[in-house]
Image 1 (cartoon, rainbow, N blue to C red):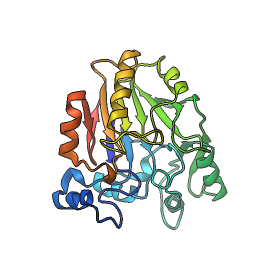
Image 2: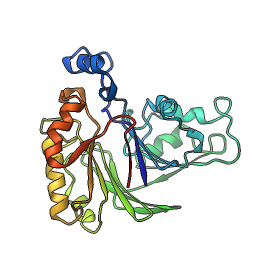
Image 3: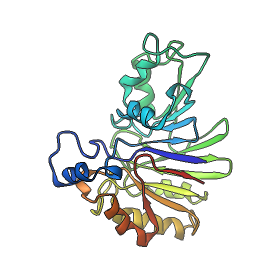
Image 4: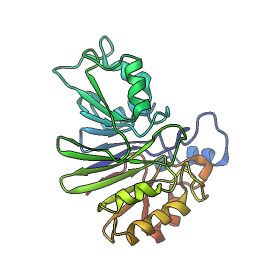
Length: 271
């Protein structure tokens, strides 16, 4: 399984839109890995996790033919993870796609409901949708996907995902606080090869909704204690906000003692 991190920032990006804070100024000055777009990842060449406003830029920067993506997993309906308006551009005259290339979208009721309400599912866009609920597992050709409940937006069943491909398992855990107990119960039955964890708050602790470094350290410790992870499991931090303040090299320095790697836009890993 190959994972390409297309975007590694929270909703506002980093440097953030309109922002003049010191963290954004430093990111502009240093550039490189400190320039972060909105969160998304590509699994192999055909499965995309989340669809932010920066998806167009991601395709150009990474040489991705978006028409060839077969599957799209959406974590929740917030705009930085689900930019509905761009899905309309999959239909003529905005796009001319050769052959019957279907995009199958999986997400919660809010996500699928918005697609259907805007009439984006159908023959013109070649989009098909399916609602996934917490603790539901589906087989998608060579992938097995298990949706778990996130601790994020009250009133919406936000999801994190376990994605298994050819015997390797990825835990995609962005936009969540410390995992709910029912999610932990489901995880205990699995073995994770790579865990990608929300680190929106940087060095600060967060009581739910998102996590910071204190929480992801606890997640790592509990995963190892419960046998969900071991010494070979890779732990990756992503979804950073400028409010956390730490630039990439500083994140590396803080996280290295805990065996956690901070992702950056374009970071690629094979498991």
